[in-house]
Length: 401
Ligand SMILES: Nc1ncnc2c1ncn2[C@@H]1O[C@H](COP(=O)(O)OP(=O)(O)O)[C@@H](O)[C@H]1O
Ligand SMILES: CC(=O)OP(=O)(O)O
Ligand SMILES: [Mg+2]
Picture (tube, rainbow, N blue to C red):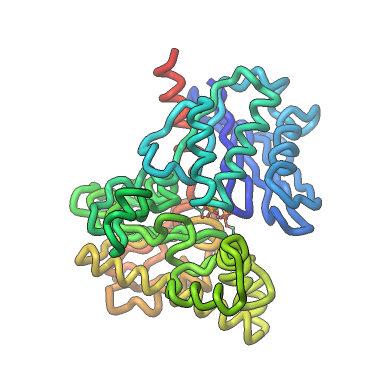
């Protein structure tokens, strides 16, 4: 069975075509820096030359269209035509309380995803565009939604409720949901595998640090707390998102600047975080260039970003009364030795000790980067949300037929 997986992140579109007989990858690729004038499409057909195209891609719709065209391209494509694809799996970021598991996409499911747009304004619209674009070119191919929120359904009530009047939860399901669940689950399972540990009794903190970022506490293989909340805005400072902020500051700014709901939402989701503080970029690569050149605002942005990740790791060691394994993943987590070093060097009290040589290696495979003596094992695990989505898609389609 051939499955296409589309993973729309806030600044990127990632895709993979799998042959599920043996879980081999026929092609994988990504469009990065969506919304900027030099978006990059990288397409890697297995066994053929890697292709890189730079063009203006301001929104996800254009990105999805160029990916679908590339897949059937005469020279770079991996499909004779779309009929070879038997199912399409989508990452869907917010499922609200309607979905705690992956589902076959029906018009009702699409409506439910649409209802969650307010809760994930940078993501759910892109996920729906992906579903629509596929419908246009493969109208009869079944599609499956795999939710970022699902893995965090194991959080208990004391963790997922906000300390506000209970009616708000009862009336509107105002609660913490958590995101990047597919990734946190994948890297935690991989790390246990690499270390040859069983999930039972393990205390893991995984740091998914991409354009959006979240930290999760995973005890006995289950998510017990995570830094994102009702929406992907809570928690860490991110590329363009503020993360944690006193709600009174939000009210104050709205009042002083006479901002509408849409304007304040846009400020916190799109103009804050790294770009808001540095004024330079939301892309960590450019922030690091600034840091190395002693640029003051880039250095401040980097230090705030790092500090907020470190605070969550400490909090989650407290939440689990211990820490055995610390994982870094996603665009920044996998590729920024300088950030990992600053975090780990300041966690020595927890028993974290980095092997600096191992930390400096750039590689695309799972690896331990802590020293022999480190009590806490530190790993870099490249995430593979697409493989998890393909497996769920195969299961659901398999159960239908
Ligand atoms: N070599 C690198 N060094 C530092 N940061 C990097 C590097 N490569 C990619 N990144 C960061 O990864 C981010 C994208 O992460 P990713 O997980 O793909 O994001 P998302 O899925 O949220 O769109 C980019 O914004 C960039 O800051
Ligand atoms: C939920 C979320 O923030 O996703 P991403 O990091 O892919 O933008
Ligand atoms: Mg992502």
